[in-house]
Image (cartoon, rainbow, N blue to C red):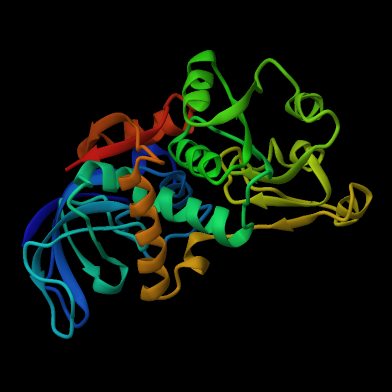
Length: 325
């Protein structure tokens, strides 16, 4: 079968993303043929494009998040049938109209969740689930600092943490993004382009500081984030939007209060089909209950994936961005 996809033959800038015709084989053992209806956009896509996360091989179709319908089921696949509405947030190869995917990565969509909503929330929502429920189990009364609070992941995490009874302090880069963050449950919002966020956190908490910091920005915020933590607090560095964190002296963790630091990945927390299904079930529950609303800030045609990635990298997006195949 012929289909259109975004394919890269080398790592580099947005210009390495080419919209081309590709051949899709029939699904093999444990695989499913999917027609995508919507595709998610994430910083991880940019990391693979640039080579920060080396692609498994070249040429390569990026993307790890999408939703669509099952066209064909391969041998040995159980629990899925032609016509099923499914989504995923793990694996690679999502920037395509049609693709073959591993059945173990797929979850069935409940009736109340559209393809577009699913594509905007699967990778981000599964990530939020492990951040809040596994990496650091947030409970009522905890004080959280969240960077990029108005991004697609940030808005989900803010709402979920608020529903758990935590006090969320969010950082943003504009008044417009501040409004979104407050609406999503951030009790306090800091514009990091105008204020020293660490000083503001100290002021907001009256010197008590935070139980946990969720930092998907990386290089430019890491050291300041450590200054926002209570003794024995946890620093969760889960992204590299400003570049990877390098050259950290572990002794700093001792002087700042015996801090904990972790660099988790979604892949580690979704190693089995059971883990994926369990996390997705709780994500769907939060969305269907209304505790978490999924906001789509922009839609781009799949052929314009380079422009979408450029906007995301420049922090010009709010909420989630999706690609339409």
